[in-house]
Image (cartoon, rainbow, N blue to C red):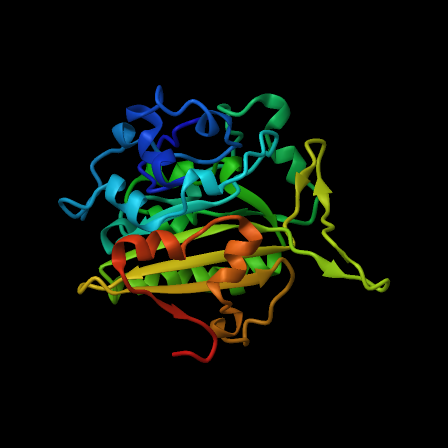
Length: 285
């Protein structure tokens, strides 16, 4: 499993990210078995503009993010189950040029567990970023590394290029209003009730590597104000064409529904340190 080579502020779980170098010998179990996930090793990160003193990756991870024990190991999965980014205004500007980037295989993943560009060719799906390329303009290398196919999931083109893109833009805009913006993104595979009254989880797979096509995508925005107040905005969108005219707030859901579907826990980890939390759902603003 590669430590994602750019300075992306990505995490696979709380101690999972910051501990790849520092604690690798102490945590060979779950962390060593985790599926393909873009993970940044703190020692590999170049200097990041605007990084606040005293609030490094360890503090972010232990206070705000899901923990490794909450992530089920799925050793043969050719894409991330979830990624976490920290967005800051300084990181949204720079010389990173999307036109210089190419989607490529993640050679830290065993070949028979690895997604390839051929899997997507002719599938009708976009290679949808989980960690958005535009979130990492501060470094060409950072942007390049968002194009590993381990940071990608099959996404309906209309969704990827319209409503989901609008949600990504909105996430970036929040850096103007909050001291810290953390974004957790991932695929979901949700059940659907069929004519027989029973619920089933069904999804398409593409390519010879059987890359799973999510039924939905989630994005949880963890927003920290200058005074320390924490807000959660949690969204779920179907992996289907979505009318751009529908306001983003219509896709707000209780964070508990994402916790239940993804196996991650956000609220307990935040409350353990922050003491209070405001969860924003549709109609609650």
